[in-house]
Length: 456
Image (tube, rainbow, N blue to C red):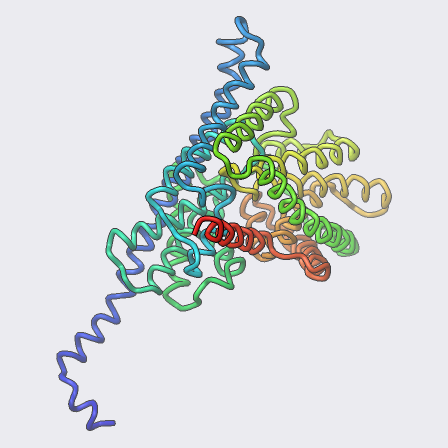
């Protein structure tokens, strides 16, 4: 061995050691850049969505309603906004439809393309259209996909050929995207490590890049939007230990519903595929009609439209009966499926959080009435429900726990959150349900294979 080492020139050894030291530093710097850019585009996307959705209705009411019926112009404006989003996706980047998180997972596995020069503008502008129209979609899916695209963009700009580095920065961008969407750095890190575990290549460098990107994205977000929680809800005390069985029961119910929820996503995607048959005119017509209908819904039944973050605040403030909450819950299941199943550019995290809050609060009200001897606050179950539905559908319980805690600052509810999310995951697995993004990726690959067979 010594004789072999003696034959190696000392300059070559020093150069090798130096490069091994410098390469991680260069990757860290690139991950920092990815985090900053992801945080910036994620924050701008949120501001843009709020601007479009918040100013549209007031502008219509103040400027237009005296000349044209309010419902008619609301339908037309929302239909136009949605049509822009659907057109951009169908014309320029079909991979930007839906959440886009499954596309990141496919790119990490090397089985899906990452055309960042198309995905970033299409997802940004298309998301502004569909979310601004009042459709039941979240901004986290677009932000995660744009973050991953930024990671790939940086490796292309710097002409990085090393596959591990390209993989790490793609994952880092995804983590930064979730962190920027929800002001939740820990959830962003854990999302990649836990939910993307089949695709993520674990190493010291890859973990560091994910952490750096997530932290930098959050810093950018907070420097622009402030450091408060994304969703302002009451702060709850820790529940009695004797009431934990109720949280486990709630988790079991969400585990069952999570399997049904994922199945409904598949059914609605199949339904819309049969309707438009991937024809552009039909695709745009269906999207415009949906957008227009949700423009009207946002005016008259706002609880059934939008991403649901405002609804979460309203629910946790109290004032709703359990029967009303369950009716809204059923209605939002339908509206969520219509919007997400249609292929509109937008995520499903936020709508799921709203559904979890609705059912959780209703469960808490019922438990409070049936068990008056226990010190039960219905809002606790609403917070637990947010994490439970996420855990049951995405199959990432730790991410769900961290996400809800960081979004609401309810750190005293860690134990009930763990109990509820554990019950949700165990029952979802017992029933044989598949994680939603694995399911979506499988469908994407299957559809691509069929297209290639039809048009070889």
